Amino acid sequence: MIKFDTQVQELKYRVLKEVAKSYMAGTLEQDILSIPKIISPGPKPTMRCCIYKERAIAAERVKLAIGGDKDDPNILEVIEPACDQCPIGGMEVSDACRGCLAHRCAGACHMKAISFDEHLRAHIDKSKCVNCGLCAKACPFGAIINHKRPCESACKIKAIHKREDGISEIDESKCTRCGACSYACPFGAIMDKSYILKCLDIAKESEEGKSHAYMVVAPSISSQFHYAKLGQVVTGIKKLGFHEVVEAALGADMVAYKESQELAERGQLTSSCCPAFVRYIKTSFPELSDKISSNLSPMAEIAKYIKETDSNAKVVFVGPCISKKMEMENEESKAYVDCVITFEELQALIDAKGIDLPSLEEKPLDNASYYGRIFARSGGLSDAVREALKEQGLDFDAKIKTVSGLDQCKIALMGYKNKTADYNFIEGMACTGGCIGGPCCLTHEMRDASDVDKYGHESKEKTIEGALNSVLIK
Image (cartoon, rainbow, N blue to C red; front, top):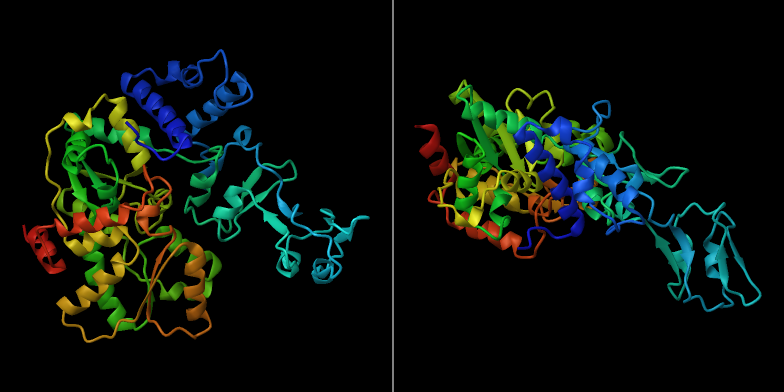
């Protein structure tokens, strides 16, 4: 049964599962040193040069599984023993160099970093090269290539660079916690801190009657757990000890109503649903911070509603997103959201408890409208805002720019900054394709967007107002 895209995800899952099993059994403190041996039993290595390195890396993963470095404010950490296999990178001359006479590459290089051998083939002096790429653009044969580490290529805001010893390092001042680097790294050398132990504590308290544990599931859950039905996943979550399972999509319905009102009042906005996009604006476009919608994200909005309705509630959010773990600590959200885990972590918890999802009965998950559910894909928020304007009879011409991926977000924000935009609302998602492209999805497949739309059409409520009335009036 294939549950994950890559073996890196499988390795991460195995560590999380073992940590969760030991914690449930009350033996984590005794087991913590033996878990790396379970992950890499030996005697021969299966992933690295030697069994000792495999276990050293597994030990670092165990640390992250129990919360990571408390002094590091970033949700993402570089596992240093794992980060040693990538080439240094930079501009390099390939075998396609023909030793031409024009030498346009040298003419384009302001640093005088290019020289030629006796065969007129170009060579780049790494001590002078600044990797500007002008030589590559000038070469008529495309013979100069910029080799980047996968993590650097994935980071569209250049928040990752190599240290002098070659280990990757994350620039805290730039990082948005989108997590693209963690999914891109083929060695799994970048991993997010996990809060699965806190999640288990909340579930246990609920089982003991000390509180009511609610799991709020991101709308992209409809494109995950392909080996089981969604109703079976809901049952599985309740078997973990949760009192109730609620759709974050209902929070999306609430946000769509409020955000459309704010757009009509203010005339120009950016969305506030994606915490990585919001952080990107604040760190890279601080002059546009006043354009960010004042609304909470769907996660925080529905968590707020739950806590206002049930004073004994504790809320755990599950989704594909690493940056939600950052949002949980934000001043405007921390009173409502007690814990955030990912789909990868939920899978580990389900399997650690021995829950066989395909064998379970189905329990319904029917809280939200079609429009709330399609927030999971790029363009879903835009459709919902248009619908909310229409349902509320707001006379406002919404000209929406829908962008996903921080490189595309940058272009849209530049339009606001330079006052050249012919749009008045930016739906920004840090992950390409929206939340269905999140780094902690179990799978990243072409069918995921259609799965989200299909699930949206299955909603009993066909309007946002209908969804809100069916729940909020109760």
